Image (tube, rainbow, N blue to C red; front, side, top):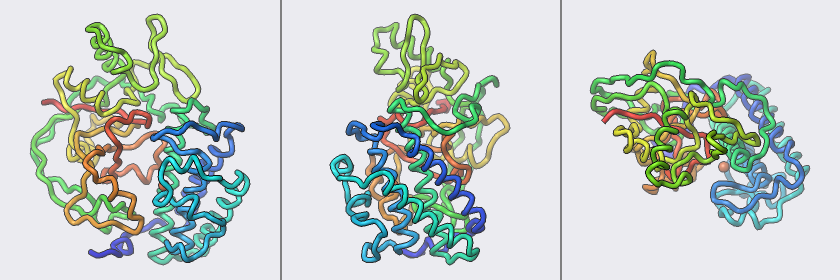
Length: 383
Ligand SMILES: [Fe+2]
């Protein structure tokens, strides 16, 4: 296929379905930004964060740029200086703290005007392949930034202003007896075809891989299991801060975990979360197990076993994020290509803040292995 691969991606959801998904996503964005107290939009410079109002402006700039400006700066934005302010490819991370952003109500009007133009297209009922692709791209991009707001709010200890189902927020109790699920050596179809609905360029293309026999845990590592490791490290002179999950603290004999703005006693049956890949690997070394590869975790997700218990967390793999054979960038060239740097790690799964349509076995997430601020955990394979 060629540079216009994205025009072949099919099928796409109905206009009505896309309208509902965009309304839902826009409501999350508006609620999160609209509920910040005065002053909370000012955050210290950090490699893991963006200034919240910059991120808000950026996600709607992205939507307008691809859906209503054909991806061309020569087609003007309805917001003056929008490209200079909000094009993430042009404004490097630290500069986002230095630019003079428009007032919040200007950004909110920009958001409403752009989304309303897309609603008008969707209400008309018929979409061209370009419109279908770029509306989905912008929707998914917004969903990913909504999830980024969740882990930013978690790291900033801000209250999360949306309701959520407590059972779905990675607090799933691991009551089932854990076991290892055996997979025989098999041929696995990794990646996606052009007929798999909306896909990202890093999924191109579907290809066959031979996956050797492996045994993978039915459940993600629990707080109880991780605590046993942590206390063993401390007993042998290790520093707690070197090994503990990102938002844990010990008071007396009790461990607590901060969830947004609340300190809660840890639920020993819940999957351990906010663990870096490095800490996950130290745990594995101690237990005599290993992290799954990308293919192993993809295979588990694509052929779910009755004993498989998803964790509502992005799960680390031991695989470096690399392009598949035949990769080429889609129009948003910075989605994948800059991150094939040999430093990023693949994660599979989803978090509680991921919409259903992104919860696909083929979806490849990627982060630096030192990160623990987002909603991540891990499961293990036998050696
Ligand atoms: Fe973005």
